[in-house]
Figure 1 (tube, rainbow, N blue to C red):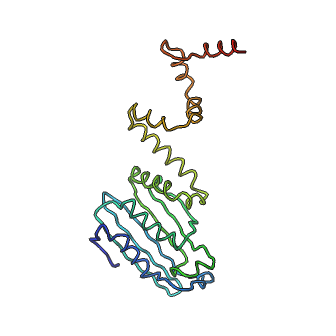
Figure 2 (tube, one colour; figure 1 turned 180 degrees about the vertical axis):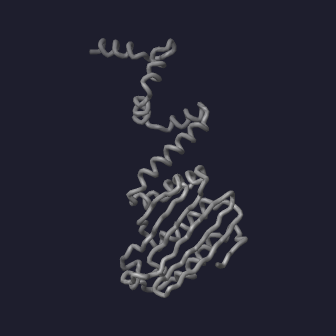
Figure 3 (tube, rainbow, N blue to C red; figure 1 turned 60 degrees about the vertical axis):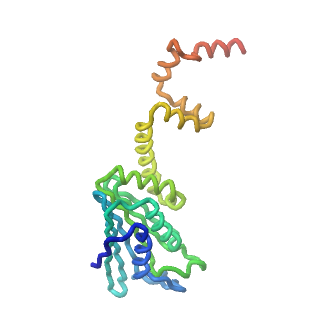
Length: 236
């Protein structure tokens, strides 16, 4: 194993690209990968634990019985923009995200990328598939933060995976709960002010019946249901 350590912040994405291209260089025509059952693949595992990030590369070329490893260690948590640089680099070449799954209570995310085979993509990195793993175990909060970021920035690619919807809903529910728990009344009202009239009406109609009853039967209620129905009858 060869280790690359003490990577400067601004160099991280460049170092990652250099390692990938070391094993999967650009070629003018990679069409032979389609017919090669032993075509090379590369896996990238980004493991974040106790404030450090360890990035492992696993290159396999079964045809030549070759298997190589590289690793990078940085003494901090990887940043969103660094992950964006990695994701964009992969998706520019391997446009098809054909796998998305989570493990260990959604603290580990696995994504698989394939080439979108067409004439314009004959030129590119010489590998049939790229696997990217994000491992935050056991930090559920940090994992949730990065998952939410992925949904915000790459949902057009992610939504094609049949497993994405359940994961997305759970992450958004968790984030929504945490979001509102950390807002005061003024902050909640600012959020609600962004909703359209129809969205506000749907939200109000979904109120718990007891909450609705409590505020429509209070002495300070501005519009009581009884008064509303009486007005309706008079207008009829």
